[in-house]
Every structure is written in C-alpha cells, then in structure tokens.
Length: 153
Image (cartoon, rainbow, N blue to C red; front, side, top):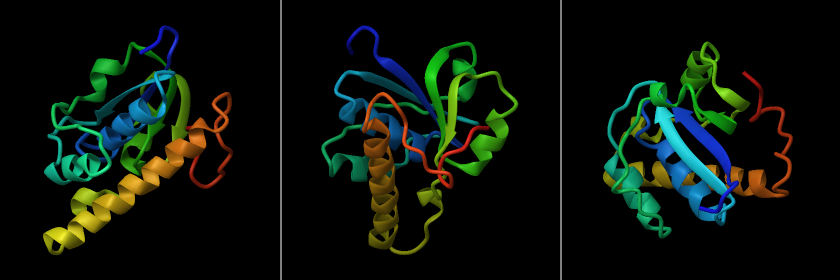
C-alpha cells in the first residue's frame, strides 16, 4: 500500500460475505491508492462460497478472518460503507469517523437451493459490489451520486 492511501471500512452483519468481498475487491481494484478493511456487527466466519466466488475472479480471501466492528471504532477512515440495513442502523449509534455511505445488498448467505443456485446468488452479489466499487473509483476524487443506493447515516 502506498503512503497516503485512502482508508475505507466496509461493514455488514457478520463480516462473512459482503464486507469481505468488498474489502478484497477495493484492495484489488484500488491500485494501492485505497486501503480497505471490513468488520461486522458480530464476527462470524468467512463463508466458503464467498471464498469460492472471489477465487473465481482471482482474489483470495481464504486467509481473512471475520472481525467485529468494535475494533475499528477509534480509527479514522475516509469512508465507512455499510452493505446491509442492519449495519446501517446499528452503526448510526457509533462514532465512526469518516464519510458514511450505505450500499444495501441482500445477504447471499441466506440463499437456499442447490449449491449451484446458491453460488449464482453469491456471484450476483459479488458482481454488484464490484460494479458499485468501480463506480465509486470513477472519478477517484468524488463518490458517485446515487440517491437510492447511497445515503448518509
């Protein structure tokens, strides 16, 4: 990471899928100009299907660990981005320092069906987060205005 990289904290409920994927994607797509971390309302585990769909696009999150957002409360971030409504509601009561955005994504861990059907949901969420991050990075100096998917909490 280059000195002066912009810092982003991604938050969701369990830090097992969405925030882990977002962290991996931003650290990869941010070309060293961004440093992402992730946490959850609670810490859980890294979902094996999240690991699998990220490996499909060349990003390895298999060595990551699930973290509670509590360990980030006194840190300064350029952006704190929640990826689910529960995290947005919960985090509004904490003093996270940084611009706060909300990008709601459904929880792929709740998907039911065959493994292939569940993988399709994980891929759709991964691709949605990737598109959101790509839009966020263009132009790098300002985040995109999307009144439905981004709001201050």
